[in-house]
Length: 365
Image (cartoon, rainbow, N blue to C red; front, top):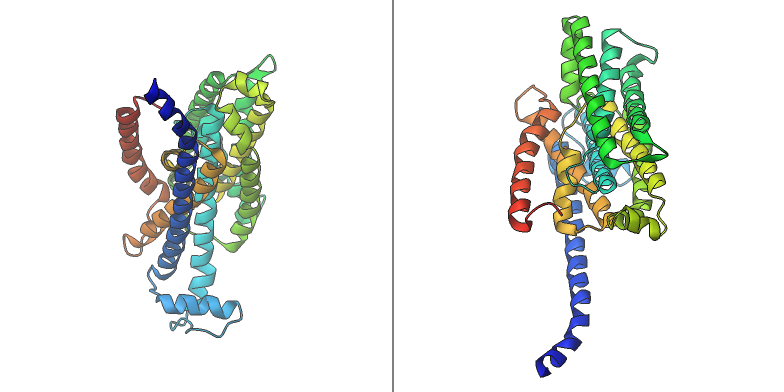
């Protein structure tokens, strides 16, 4: 009895101690991701067929903001390469990687399952079918923007179709939504195969290349279009982070705590579709970023969605910058498909995470 009474006052200090440790871990993670993102950006700026030293990169940036510090690129095309080719490509990598990771984290929160990813609701397959149709039938209603516009609209329309087909009696069950998404993805795959059959050799090669994903050809005009959509989607997802935390307690508990579960699910599915469609419309399908990154970040930050979403945004941007740097520098004068690299690395890595989680925790949290 004496031992029990003496131990009782210690209990209240356990939770604050755990909270302090978690906050410290989260702050360190933020610092690491931001520092790594800066380093990866500088490495990406200097890497490629035209090597640009770090001091010239920093000097060029300083001169652009009005500071007469450091040397400018010595190569005649160095300045043009930095600002018209590499910076725009890096900016697109940051936006696409962050958008896909945030979309994956939001999707996993909506489904309550760390195996969920944006492609579950058919946005990627719908975008691929629409882009394939634009390629095969030579749609040029918006000039060079025709394929990205078709891909974006195709992703959104397919997601809305999946949601409409899975809705019954004013509600949408998660299992029904997943199964409907699987069926729609299968149909989209068949339609894409038919488009490849109808198209000529050049069209088939274009469709295959688009599906493999690439940031080659990224321009500032693309960044200007995608950035506002990504910022809007991330902002809405962050605003819903508290509701996602409550939803993790279960639908019934969330409803009792004032969460409009159905409205939250509709809103976030639309946000996921917008983020993913905007990302893939200009660079094609990039696999595993929306699946692996949020799951890995969750292992470090814990289940809190505000921290998870912010860290996933930074980690997704970091992963895609690194992958794109490898894609354009691994083989001279060759731009490797970005989606191929993320799948080659993400697939085995996710399998390792799966085995580790099942071994240490006895199953998925």
